[in-house]
Image (cartoon, rainbow, N blue to C red; front, side, top):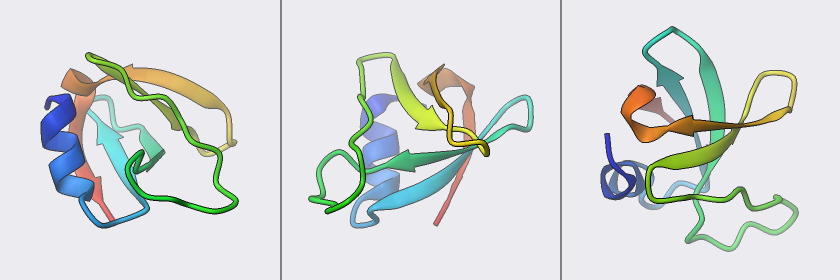
Length: 70
């Protein structure tokens, strides 16, 4: 997956759950929507910052993402 592919998948959704190749689940926020009360997480060229189930911020590479759900 790439930066552009992930953005297209979450298009009009303020957040989504992403799943990695090792079976981990993370919350991701759409950087292009104004989400009052939600802290924006950085998106980079090859990786994105996400929140794990404990609310801890982590950085993962787009290539690790295998599924996206809303």
